[in-house]
Length: 57
Image 1: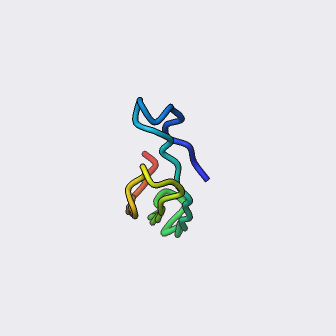
Image 2 (image 1 turned 120 degrees about the vertical axis):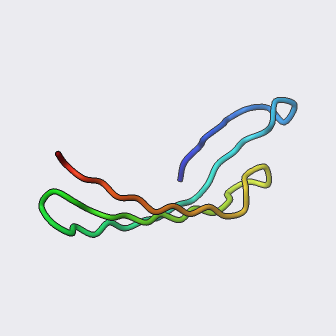
């Protein structure tokens, strides 16, 4: 659960979402990740997703 914006309805309303994700360690210096989130309030976008890559130099 994440609350990105907590405001009165006059100021855009509450934007909150439920989310989950996973990471996979490719090597000791690199990993990939994926995340998904879905709306917890009517003001929040219905669905979002993301993919990432992290590399240690």
